[in-house]
Length: 164
Image (cartoon, rainbow, N blue to C red; front, side, top):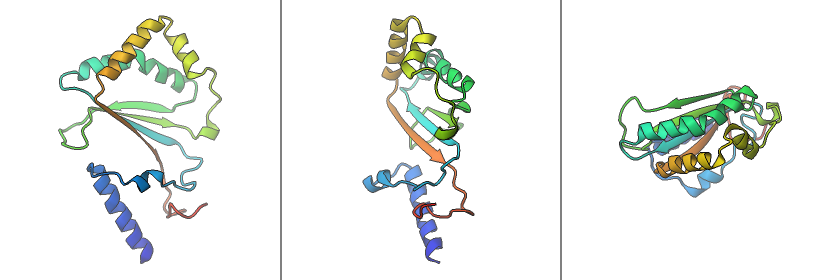
């Protein structure tokens, strides 16, 4: 009964947070104590841009950041990347693009051949153009936040507090 109540309260909190109601500081510090270890991670990056600038932002993303993601996919650092926009208008939380990146667990990823800096210099020999493009994309970004998710097998481990 206590576990059911706990899960119900936890679910209610998740729903409230998904509607944009504040983020208590203690919640950010909560760790999952190993939940999802060995599982793929799902990163969701949210971007809000000024009205009417979505196509400009997307073109800059495609030119300056998408090649980095393609390289990471080709070299096993990332499994997939999908760019989403909303199918309907929502009030909150406000975002124009959500980019979902699925990556293998850190211990299963091949060692990166290049550092991020080396990769950028390899993909963009005209580094001044790259810097200008990225500055432009970020100047169009009004808000940005990332979330990282791991799957929970609630049959095997129905708690975020009890270590494996």
